[in-house]
Length: 191
Image 1 (cartoon, one colour):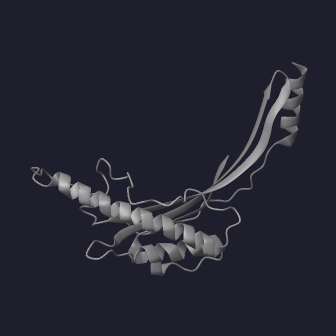
Image 2: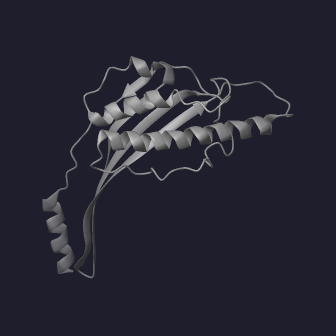
Image 3: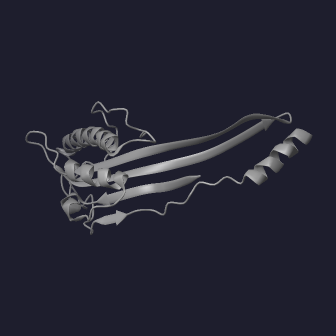
């Protein structure tokens, strides 16, 4: 079962316009999105779009074989996601083969600690944003190199302008129907 704990997506220039959320996770996300919008490497582009999300996945698995319970367990993970676009709306690091390869020495930030303090969340998102930004810079350089000398047809923008969006999904408690599972277990043992 999946639930979206928090999703904060916004265009970088609007980061300062956010009202401060009450949730420490959301506050950490807001701060890191604003910080990521100001990233800059020497003479290269700064991000024009930054998105951060944290998905919380809760699962419960039961398996049986030959009438006996083999495995039963709960699992919970938090999955951070950071997306960054560099360039501009008309031409950016996306929509190109290899634009998501991420060769920038990525950090292992594919899971957030469940009991993470706001400081730890900020650190994880900072590492993810740093790696994503460097990958975006590499991708736009590859895209420019590949398109150099190619006859250009009609140019279609890579990204459409839109109002910033702040979306926080409904948080529903993870529930397992223990009674149904008990009946299922009993049925397995009778076979």
